[in-house]
Amino acid sequence: MSREGISFSSKQETEPTPEMSPEDFEAMIGQIPALKEMLEERLTELKTLEEESKGNEERIQELRIEINELQAEIAAREEVT
Image: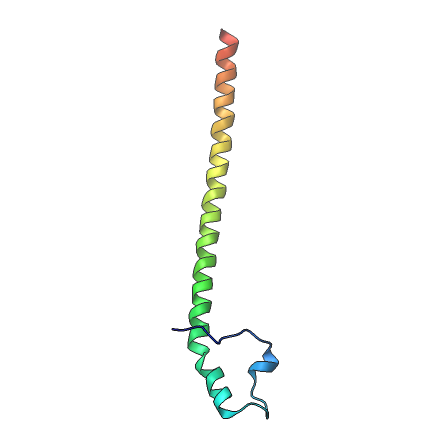
């Protein structure tokens, strides 16, 4: 579905006005499916980014714990030598 010619505008511009031709109004209405598709793509991308971020935060925390444990282990072994 082509998105060319679709522009985001204020609510005022999306409501039919006396100056809007019937063809322009039909074109505006005809863009609804493409706009819904664009919205769905953005929602999917946002969800993916949020999930990736959450996974990264958990991994970062795991790495911090592992680093602390390794530093403690190294320090303990170095004390023995």
